[in-house]
Image (cartoon, rainbow, N blue to C red):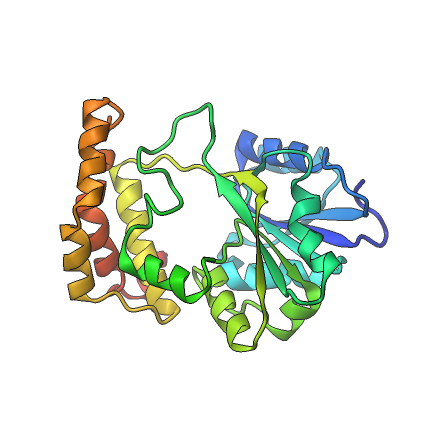
Length: 290
């Protein structure tokens, strides 16, 4: 069920040139089994015409903005402001629902109790396609201390708008605001300071995988370092040294080499480079994101 005049749930997806994978995301959304009406709102920031045709082939609300106006925080605020639902589900254009129960599960804690302001859905790597040896999420990838510290401080949740739901009243009280990246961690910090609670719903799962070459990995890790700085998370020189010297990831690298699962330069260098790149990114200026 979708495009109801009074949807209870709004699925909000920022998009640009999502290609065939975004088409698969939309297909999976519209086969969800839910007991409530919902809408899908796509906020597009300059997609190619073929991508726009694909989006329009689905029963979505399409709102277009110029590419220059995209901002991770403000664009999601825009989507929330024009969405109609009581519950706002934020999804990335490359996050594919794993099954037909994803949407019901990600909003269920909000429907069941007023205790929670938001819900963190689960993410997993794809099962049948290429993926980075160190994965692209979870402790294998985020082994450095700024990530570990954040997770510990926030009760095991690193809030991510790749797959999450927020009660409209909670978003109205605590919008994302302008931020060039890590709008989700910024929101998590602000919401927690207001006493708002986030539920963890790992069974509301999406497939979300990235495969990095050396250049992409370098940019990604530096962006993370810059983003952590924006949300006030410090990654010091001593943290970088300790993370570089930590032995467990090198054992994993040796295992991967023996099994011939480490195939690229990016995969081989990742445990050496990530601490330095995150540290470096935390000292770059705003122009890094352009």
